[in-house]
Image (cartoon, rainbow, N blue to C red):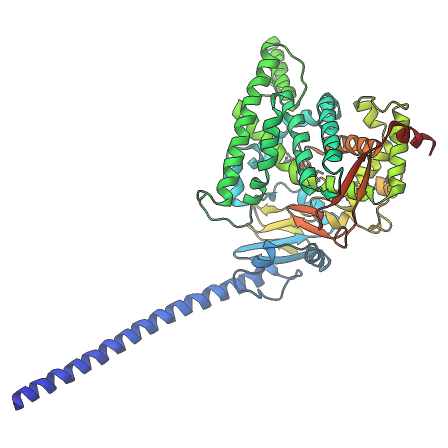
Length: 528
Ligand code: HEM
């Protein structure tokens, strides 16, 4: 019995000891794990804060990262114009750090220009997923000399002379859509944000692809394009998972490029086999390849002015034109209609000019010469772009340490963002910069002479390829809209507020009503 007891108690005490030691071991183990995790967390947070301080140097910005590591990531998901403005006002150079990305914002005209003109130090920054959506082979990812050479082949497609060829196709879209707007809103005012995105998409597609693209394809692309914008978030999962936003964006982009590829094949047939005349950007591009080929065959020693591009390459480039144009043009279109609808004096002046230049013939077709003579309407477009520049900032990435000012060097790998808005609202150049005054653009005026402030389309080697196209197409569009329609704007407390959605839009999405004007009303504008 005692043996039993002793053996029982012996086994009991060794079990307890074992349990304690096991428990202690596990506490130690756990403690070590916690310690390790804590040490790593403290290490990461400290490293992040120290790196932030080192990179920040003496420029404006939060004293430390209030949200460790992530920084103002959550705010960046829902950007506010007022927050941007406060940042620009905080100093010529200011900074912010989101996750591992360090971002320097340059808000003066001269710093913005300097950065845009420094291709040795910076190149355009694209979100990671853009490479997958636009494809790595796309020309927009070229840098330095390769980019300059490629652009030389594209510049000719958007000169004033080239653009004149595309006007008939554009006028058809303008007429169709304006008519449709009046039809859609005949009973009551409606939101026009989506309609203006669609007309901009249709106008671009007709300009780029002419009659090779069908109305159904235009509608399909216009309806789906927003999926591409939605996919381009700042931070994305590294792989594309089916049925996520990025997946839909990629599928839409691929389908759209397939359509462009088939249009390119038709354009090649028209120009090369049928000796047709160019009517759209694709035609003009293929025609310039043909001319280069012909001059090379006449003189084999001559430099080949432009190489051959495959249908796939053409489709990728055309997609970048749509990509670059869609959001900025839709933004400009919304503001332009809102600003004019709210200002009867501006509307009256556009109308007077339009009917006078058409010699009283409201059906006179648009031509390059006619658009060129619309001086007042042109000033309205220019003032719209100054007053509400669609692109507020252009993100660039620093390739090597960049001494951007005498006392600050942007570190390699950081993002540097030239800001366009402040230069366009500089009170020294634009008196009362927050007022909409088309007349400030008359020839010889301070605004017109301050070419350095005109940063609406960027500057330097990546300056907007489509700027002439924008000025011509918008002058034509607003001229016809003002002449042929009454445009009533339902003003809400949010109309003048700025919503940031890639570019900028009125916060209430713009509520309008279009009504046809009679020929007599239009003709009366001359005498008014
Ligand atoms: C109101 C409308 C538009 C605005 C405000 C605008 C503005 C801009 C800006 C700010 C840039 C960056 C420039 C830089 O980095 O210095 C840019 C680039 C570009 N834009 Fe536009 N854009 C507009 C419409 C268009 C259209 C209609 C096209 C069509 C062809 C277009 C094609 C491009 C291209 C291809 C680039 C990149 C050029 C390159 O990297 O070489 N844009 N645009």
